[in-house]
Image 1 (tube, rainbow, N blue to C red):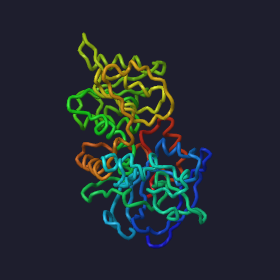
Image 2: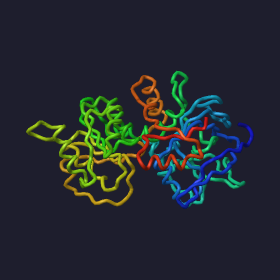
Image 3: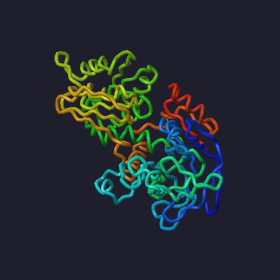
Image 4: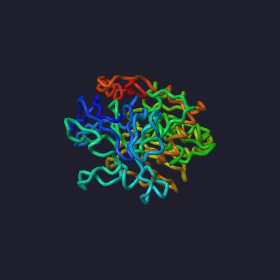
Length: 383
C-alpha cells in the first residue's frame, strides 16, 4: 500500500455509541507497517471504549496481512501474516528492560502518560496523520484500531505468524488479547505447575483460556465456576475437570469457596485451591479468589476490575498472594509465538472458541450477543 486508501471503520462517538465512516489510510513511514486486517475480535473493552471521551477507530484484537512496510522495518515483510499486539513495547524503558513488556512505560496506552494531558502524540502509535477522518488525524484504539479493513501500526505491534502454522483469521485475531490474558494469567502470573489444583471464576473468553492455561501447565484439578450451565459445559471442552454452577444470591461466592475446599482437600480436612483466577469482571467478586485458595496460595484477578471494593483482610490469611496482572504478563515476541505453536500442536483450542463471525455493519448485534451471553467469542470478518 504505497498510496492512500479509503476504508470503512467503526468510530467511537464518545457518547457510548459508534458510527461507521470512511477513513483514509496513508502509506507507512519509517518504522511503520501497513496491515490489511482480516478479522477483529469483539471484546468488552471495545464496548467500553465508546465512552472513553475521544473519537477513535475501535478494535484492539486483530490479525491480517502486511501490505507495505516503511523504511527500517526488518521483522516483517509484505505478504507476511501477522498478529497485532495492543500492548506495544518500546524495548528500552525500565519496565521493558526488566521483562515487563506488557506495562511498557513509554508506549503502552494503558500505562504510558496520557497524550491528552501531555499534549504529545501517543508514542507507541503510528504517526497521527497515518489515519485521517475528513482530513483530520484520528486516534486508533490501543494504537491498532482493528475494526477497519486497513491499519498502519508500529513494527513492534506486529508478531509474524510462521508459515507452518495454518490458522483461520478468526482464530488468530483473538490471540492478541483474550487468549493471551487468560492463558498468561494462569501460566505467567499464576505460575501454575504440574499437579496444582486450580479454580477459574467466570467462563467467558478470558476464563476459558485461563482454563486452557491450567490444563497445558499440567494442573491436576481445574474447577470452573459460572452462572451458566452452557458455559460450564463449554469449560469441560477446554479442560475443566470439575464444574460448579454459582448462584446469584451467593455473596462473594462464599458457598462456592466451601465446595472448592471440599474438592481440593481431604474429606476430613478441606483445603482451598493452589491458584484461583477471577475472570468475571464483577467488582463484588474482586476478592473472591482469595476465599478460594489455601494458605500460601495465589489469587489472580485477571478481568481488569478497576472500581473501589472493600476487602476483608482476613481473606489474606495466611501467606496468600494477590496478583492483578495486565494482559497475562505478555512478552509479545515470546508468548504470542508460543501460543501459535501450541495451537499448531493441537494443545490450544481456538477454532472451538469462535461462536460467530459478523460483518462490520453487524457490530451492534455482536455487542448485543456478547452482553447476553449468546456467544463465547465473536469476530468481525473483513475477508
